[in-house]
Image (cartoon, rainbow, N blue to C red; front, side, top):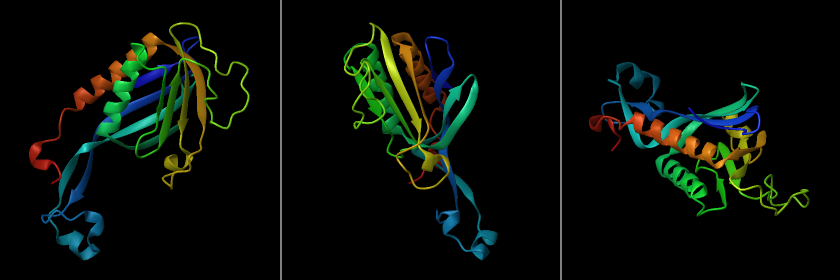
Length: 194
């Protein structure tokens, strides 16, 4: 599990765990089980197919070691690659901020070198707005979408946490995501969707 944890005392965290390649059942004609009538399901020879572009995951907001709120969803592989690449750019200084929300917007991850009205562009006042944080420290805002967590339409709102991390923390989070992705390997070629 990749985890960004508060550098100061570790009380707050955002975790992202890559679980497995998205899969679903199909019949011998490759029709989704959900598209079959009950009678067709009974007589169908079913098999599992895998996506080679979507990875199931669990994202959580953690406080004092307890998962306060989580969402399970599917992450588009190019989104994951964009996230990992952007994290590397933060660490090496090519980027000052990352504002990541996957194509299936179950969560949002905002990381910045400056205090920037992180909650919303409409935030008019923050005591440190626009000021850079000390060298090597980043502000994190992580949010879980309330609709996604309830398996309902996305709302663009939900519970979030805000905390500070070091450049090393971001590097560890990125490396752990890459390791999890590599451990997934690829689905068997003969079972990949057409």
